[in-house]
Image 1 (cartoon, rainbow, N blue to C red):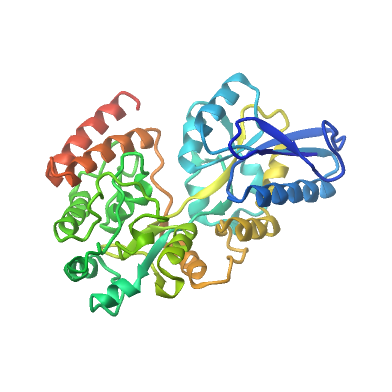
Image 2 (image 1 turned 180 degrees about the vertical axis):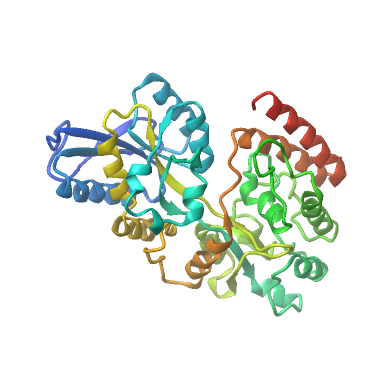
Length: 416
């Protein structure tokens, strides 16, 4: 049994000590299952220790299966997974996001995993299963869920004479001038094309009641009135001094960014890590964590991380057994505590300890796990460039969305 970890700054896998053996020693099981895992637990040492414990715990219960978990870097993930599947040399199970799951399912790189959850299907969040169910078959076993919500620097609001945190778009717009007079943007926004729209524009689109794609995924819908309302909201804020001056080009770093330095008063799509950076920057006593913003709808972004069964696997029963174990209530609860993630199951208690964790767990009921279609990433890139043009003042909201829609429809017609 081996846990393989990535050394910081290195591209080569290194083997670390595991329970009961070293080097190429194995547990002698009749089946072998390899899992590619990623830095869900940000601290490398903690990650290695956690997955060593998962391996030893699994093999103590299943002495006929030899489990190897290889810790991979986020960088170059898609390219490495695609190459592994195409060559037939890679993992039996791999951690994926919902859009990646569809990407590899469409190309025949994955097998269904319904058997892995057969006896406990009702214990999972329905949305976490639905987003990785294609053609009525499940292609991912959820092992954790991410969550985002709103956080406020109340010291900045109170300095502007605002004692209650804004919870709606109208509240945010109303607060913008008073904060701008103090040199503070009411809301952070990151318009860099390298920034995922799942953490910038899409939550606003969903709050406006809109969607990126039509229900069947055959067309885009972001150019409707809801998309226009979301983009106009940003442009109105910008005009009122309510966004950072470099909103059109900035990345989403909290540490050292406007939220961390106090030059923006709130973020609306923040993770637990983001909130911790914000507390470090402006003082934990000044940060209040709230619910997702509301316009026509209350919505936020959050996705499950799922274990997918690759076409490489030659013992699906053993692989499904591993997936079910990692997704079990006991392992899930420990993973959430170690990673700062949240349960993808209803029979697992969420991490506790502070108001941020409580608010993020509460926000799961409003979480939308992106919009999963084969062309989702390509359409995101097209739309991102046009949103940037609008924020830079070279296009109106109407023209930016219309141009993005024209290009996106051409992409869809050509198969992405």
